[in-house]
Image 1 (cartoon, rainbow, N blue to C red):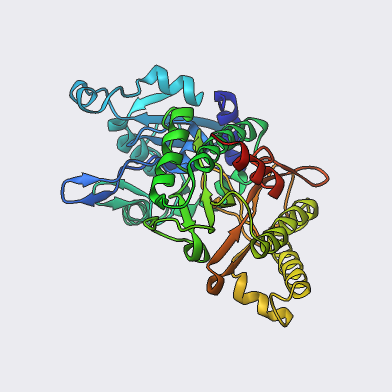
Image 2 (image 1 turned 45 degrees about the vertical axis):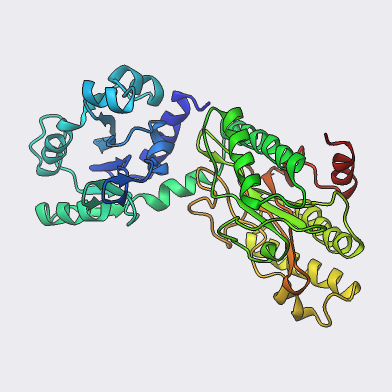
Length: 423
C-alpha cells in the first residue's frame, strides 16, 4: 500500500518543476459513455491517482506555487445520501486527507471560484498566477461533454495573459522509476497472476474453449486480489490463433496436441502485472514445439541477463532479433537472417506501471534502477499453427535486473512435470 507520505513526496517533485506564480489543475475524470443509458466502469486518471491516491470520480487536485509558498487543495464531490444508496460509500473529507496527505480538502463546488480568484489576481492569499499546468491528454474526460483540452481552451479565452502548460510529460517521467512500495504492489499483482496461470494450466486440455480458460483466470485473480481485476483483456490463444499478436476473441475450441499461449495479468493497487506463458495442452511438447520453445526461452533468459541501467529498450530489441535470428538459422527454421522478421514482429520490451504500457516510456530512454519493463520474445509460425511467447516482468537494479515473475514456471521440465502431477 502506498502511504500518504509517498504521495506527498511525489507532489513535491512536481512542485520542484513548476514555474513561480503557477497553479496545477489535475482532474480524476468521469466515466465515459458506453451506450444510450450506460457508461464504462470509471477508471481514474492515473496521473491524478499517482499524486493523490484518491480514485473517486469528479475529484480535482490543485497545487499553487507563489513566492516560494506551496499550497495544496483537493476538491471532492459533496456527500450525497441518495448516491450512496445507489452506488455505495463515497469519500468524506477525513478519508481523502488520510489517503492523500492533503490537509485542505474542499467540496468541488468551491473549485471554480477558487481558480477564478487565483487567475484574476483577486485572491487575498496569493498574487496573480502566470501559468496553469494541466494534464492535456486528449482522452481525459472531466465532465459530461468536456475533456481537459476543452477546459484549457476555455481558460485561454477567459484569461488570455495566462500561459497553459502540459504537466503530463513531467508526471509520467516520474512514474517510470518505482519506489520500494510500488515494487511491492507489483509483486502482489504478479502473485495473483501466478495463481491464475496455475489454475488455467490445471484445466487446460483439448476440447476446452479458450474463453473458459480466460474466465477461470479472471475468477481466480479476483478471488485472490479482492476484485481488483485485469491489467488488460486476457489473450488466450490456442494453435494458429497464437500467431495473432493481440488475438481479440477467445472463442475457439482447443484442439489436440496444440500449444496454448496466454498473455495476461492481474492488478494490485492499479499496478499491472503483464505475463505471457505458452503450454502444451497435451502435457508434453513434441519435438518441433520443443525446438521453438527452447529458442524463445533461451532468448527470454538472455534478455534478462543483458538488461541493465544505461541500455535502452531499442538496444534490447536489437539484441533480441540477433539472438532469435541466429538460433533460428542454426535450426533451419529460416534460411537467411532477415527472415526472422516474418516470425518475430513485435517489440521485446515496454515499461510497466499504473498502465500496462506505462505512459512516458520510450524506446530511446536509458534504463534506470527502479524501472520495471517486460521481457517478451516470441516466435509465430502461422503455417505450423504455432505461436510462442514467454514474458516476464523485470525490475532494473543497480547492476542488472531482477525477474519479478520468476515464481511462474516456464522451464520445459517444470511444465511437463506439472501436467504429470496435476489432478
